[in-house]
Image 1: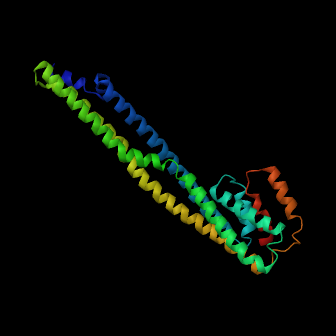
Image 2: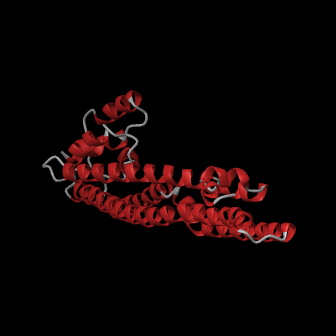
Image 3: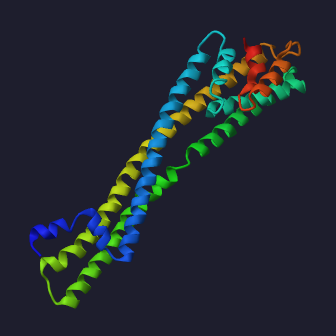
Length: 267
């Protein structure tokens, strides 16, 4: 076999076809891992960009004179947003405390504030746990893929030596295919691992920054609720707020309408 013919038989597809079953299985696993990695990368890049942009929008709503009312109106447009669910959890506790009269007595204000702070922490933790899904895959691929590729390399080299021993021939045409298969497995491992490691670090940083945004937003809402309590605005004459809350819930069960009463009182 001439050098030109040998090169033609060393394309990636030819290397896959000529590989034995073990090396083929390794190549398939690495290729699938690479595809999954890029799917997670695309999802995380798009999702974190959207979430951080929305967080800035929620923060801007809190900067307006109406504050909680403006925030509640803005959150109704994105009921599936993580902060919308956090706000709904806070609003639900606030509404429940008002129904039971716990938000009307100064003696219970401190305990209500503590409950709101705790509920906010729990809700933030739950949302961050959900957003972390997929990062484990990136970490696993980044750590394991090079070793899987290395295993394919070792296996391919062993096959090459066996071919040399069987033919008693050390020419390039005998040695090159097996060595190429071995190195190709290593290359696939690196192709899968390098983007996974880079994406994991990037996504971890994005998650940390978004966690800070959620914490800041939740803290600002808790401060506004605390101001309502201290100002004595959590009073029983809230008008038709409860009915408006029920109507909103029936309209969209997923919307963060539990805080509607809070928003109305905060206006």
